[in-house]
Amino acid sequence: MLRAIILFTFFLITAATGHTQTFYGGLFPEIAVSTKIGKGYKYTFKVESMHGLFFDNEAVNKDWNYFHDRTDLQTFISHKLTPFQNLTLGMQYRVEEGHNTFRSIQQISFVVLRDHARMGHRIRADQTYLPDASDQYRIRYRFSYEKPLQGLDLNPGEIYLILSDEVIYSYVPSESDMENRINIAIGYYQNATNKFQIGIDFRTDKILEPGSRNRAWLKMGWYTNI
Image (spheres, rainbow, N blue to C red):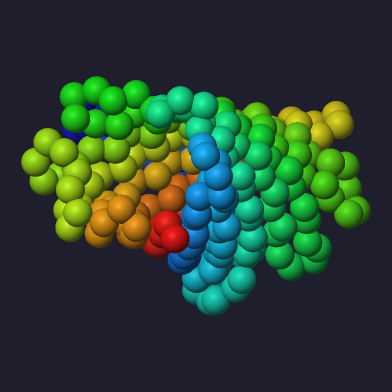
């Protein structure tokens, strides 16, 4: 099953890059700090930032140069409904060239344990409030697959593989679009407090609109509990 997932992911990336009109990417560091704030509740503060290193468009030559794409500041409060289900509310403030935006977030997620792997499902809705355009509404579904690469269970000091695919439908008045996000990463589980991940975040949007856009990021994450 794992080999089939990797091959299918590679096929999607190859197919998408072969028909794109715009392609760019770079580095994507993120850090998330979480803490318990009561029985069954957790607070998370997260910072993620995209730093472009190259840009390729049909109308222009390849341009290898640094540019700041965006930086997101996010806060979440989650409530554990069961050991495997979480309800989360969040907010995001995005800093990008031209204008900054605010977003509200609602999501429910649950995990299924099977064959020494964790399969996660997440349904998220968000609303982005734009200062000079119509507000944007999105519904998102993400499936993730996480499996230890050393032994049957994940123990401190071991590495793991995580794959995910997310489909996003967005709507603004008189216009809609779809986006797909594929992630392939290797993680290091240091202990119950810290884990690290590095991998590829590949995004395709403007699927329903003319002129597709693909983005590939080298994503590096640190996730800690205090």
